[in-house]
Length: 284
Image 1 (cartoon, rainbow, N blue to C red):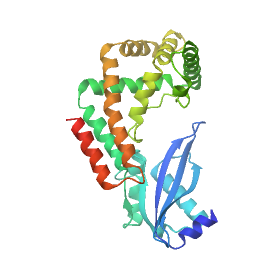
Image 2: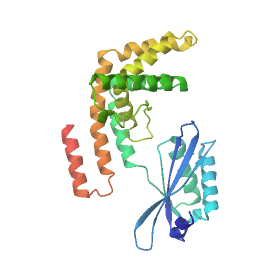
Image 3: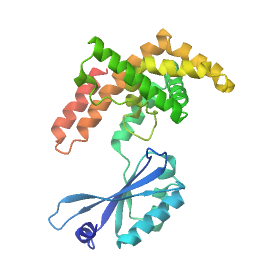
């Protein structure tokens, strides 16, 4: 860490801050610094990750200032800030961005353009009533299946058992499932590709998800969820739901590929514009 601080010295720098849950469902804050060294090169260094019990903007700012003080960095040298899309990070009045900007007016704020691309695609799609309804059901399915560790573990075990069964029958090959995810991520507006990832995983874990929902529906100890879960099962088995699932995987998949390409460090402007034109032409 002392080497990183010596690299920065008295240079101006920017920060990238993100928050996420670890496997124990504890909120963590990761901080990255970006600066230009004496050779004119843009350098990015991982500063640290900390547990935060309170994710309000004021608490995040206090934690950030504490980290700066610990490593001998002056917040007055800060010139740029970038965060995820959560409201407490980028809110116009109460976000961390606003609190820092009030103290240091010349600190620029940049929100990920890849995030904005996803927000535009999903927002436009949700203008179609049936698609908006579809995503509402997706959120309910993810929330019920992942509501407890017991259900998440059951989903994992069930899905693994089905993979082993298909491998034994020769229906799939080991290479295709070597790095396959076995969790059902929730669709959120804060992470690029989260909607696409959720839909792809739901499709790959379809039978296992239905079995977990049926398990919840049959559990007499949770009366308040049984009726709702039965409705989700019926919805998932409808033609409309399955059709929109495949359609949105295709639509979001194209935007996801474009975003991934645009974020490559060796990408050039000519090739990037070509990719954008291709995607626009394909969707018109």
